[in-house]
Length: 412
Image 1 (cartoon, rainbow, N blue to C red):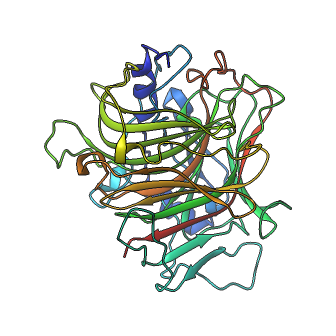
Image 2: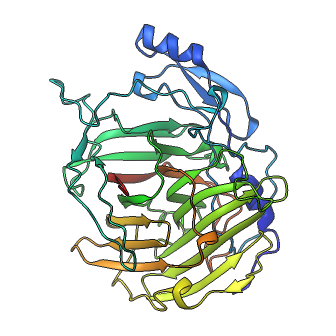
């Protein structure tokens, strides 16, 4: 597959994260019932204030870039650089997003079903065992069904005119309610304008899944938009001493212009100043049952440093899912992460689970730092879908990704 020589700009654009933290704003919201929020002005890097409900008060700028290295379209350098840190246990207060008060338990009773968090917790005896790995995910299992617009488990981020709304009626959702991640017509071409939810808890290994229906771009087939289901943690340090900043990240991404194709990536390192990285990636055409590529990359030149095989490219083939279109139906996308492997699976409406990638490579290619779990949606103007050149247009009407539920289960 032909590689773009301008991947470096994508990396620079998407890896830079911005966090605006205002402790005084938190105090104001708690005292006044949530009347303002900090909003990042997209690629301009400006901060403004606007009216908001209390559950939206922690809206901050956070740019999630695409992790996948392959491209069929030209890249453009972003005008604004984004910081790449997310809050971690070692983050200073100035690097940590303002958050809502978190309840001591993951499930909270309420007499008001329209505002009560819908998070549910299963006992620690609940477990899931990934294929090819001996550890069992026997930790606490937390599920957010998004039956309301408030969550005790996830932080909401709405930027650049986007919106994040829970408790939306949806007949296709299992409980009749879903979370909508919406970007507007003319959305700014930046991950800094993403609609996003991120777990308030960080994990070192675990099982993570979301039942998602991606945006339908059939009315404008050349729209550039990215749905991301991923883990991410980066505190700016290099604890493994390899000269690159440690980056704990595992991605499932779908481009709006190719709802039949899934992009998978596993990161261990990324150096912001040079765009050098350590990552393995796979592209799959699920409608056709075709593994397009499985490679190891060290930068964003588009050059596959190593074509993976054996345990790093298992399974070698992936069966087709008949009529697969991620924008037409809900599918459950799952990441099972242990110190020995990362397994990606997808489950269809009939309950049939398909393994997309069971990566069992060397330890240095598997993340070993804590990470949060996120789902987001944003417009890209420089990442064209596989074999779809020019699919980078700004949306001409609002686009929405629907999330029925998200589940996180710690390893132990």
